[in-house]
Image (tube, rainbow, N blue to C red):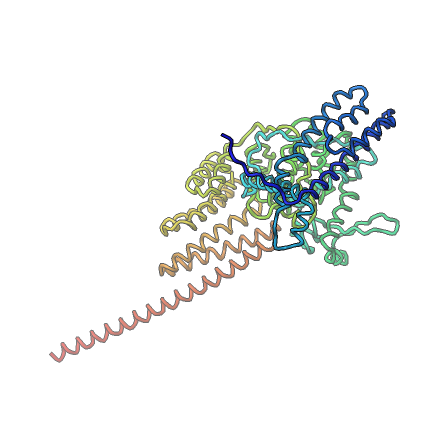
Length: 635
């Protein structure tokens, strides 16, 4: 049985068919013109008869498919058969998809019948149903593709913590970007600078504290401004530059610089002092082809102390291929008298050694906090002020010292220093550091557990770290912080008191251990932090005792806190740490001192009250005795 089907006929499709025919004619004429040009280019043109047939085909829009192939056939030469078949496949597919598609025709029909309140819009649709159908399908397809892309984006895992890499023992293979430079070439300085400004910005952002105004560092006779600059460069009339110490009028000049001008000064400094000095010393010691990462290490080491480059290069020449000796070459120190910033410089030099040996690159630094290089204890990277600790565990621990605050990448982006900071030096190949320090392995585990808020497990790891190496001052310091933090979060007051006191014990252990071991060197910055952590623990203990009504213990711990905040301030000033930290220590010290005086005053008042009551009680007892005696007499 045949089913009844309702035939839908458009009201008036004559205009649609005419526009379709005209459109197809234009398409075919364009194709024919292109083919004619192609044939002429190949040295074979259409004959008049063939042209007439092409014109007839173009005018006869009912024979589009096969007749187009006729035109194509006239252009065929060697290999034309394959070309024709490919074109036939493409043209027929395109024709089915975009021209003779039933979906398009159905949409055209609907648009030609559409009634709309907006008469102009309805008229436009009826006049251009084909274009409307194409736009409808294309827009629908685009929305579907965008929706799919958005779904994939949502499903992608996001690294919320933005942490630095935690494993350095074996890193994944990276695209080699290490380049070797000929340091004997006269154009070396300019070439190296031009190709590596991105890398210089990253290195300076990490290893030099950016100061917006000139600051006089402890032990320095020149002011420091911008990215670690202590000189002001003046351009002379002949185009050359002259160097001036950042003091007096030149300090005033530096204070007027914008951030952009400070970075320009850094460029001038690199081009006129740091890089020429490195080139001269390498040439003098017989070096010729030097890899870029080794040059970066020398730039960081000699940026502020160009006078040390000669000694470092000499030691590198003597070291040859010995890894430890190459690393220790960066511990060169020109003056034995200037020890005021020795420890801070050695911590920076330890990082230089790792850069020189290819253990870290700019991508590692981008994820770190600015100045995090100094957060590692001096005795950790240079135990007992002897050899640099060049092992995977110490480096991994140092890279873990970063936190979720502003990173080097954030600093560069926020200050618009580079459009793409990730376009930077990447070490090539897989870096392997075979040795590992068991004490530092426990430190890494302790730090990871601490960040995961697994405080008891973290405490156990730090205690093991101290057992493996009693000279590991960082373990005592970190353990003090874990005890303090655990005491802060626990709701059990008895546990809080216990852990705060254990935090304070770590400082006593550090001081006694240093007294027993004269070779043990701890940098001022680390001592500032440990004194601050202990002071905050003592501050909290004082508050607990105050709330319990124990004014004597409250006053005692406020006094201890006041003293340790003062020591943190002193060590911080000596270490040259940021002013915001120094100001925080001062404020905390003042608050602890005020609380101590208040508690002492309350204690005195309470004592006087108790003493007054005791005196009154004593007088009353004496009077009672007198009355009693008198009564006995009268009795």
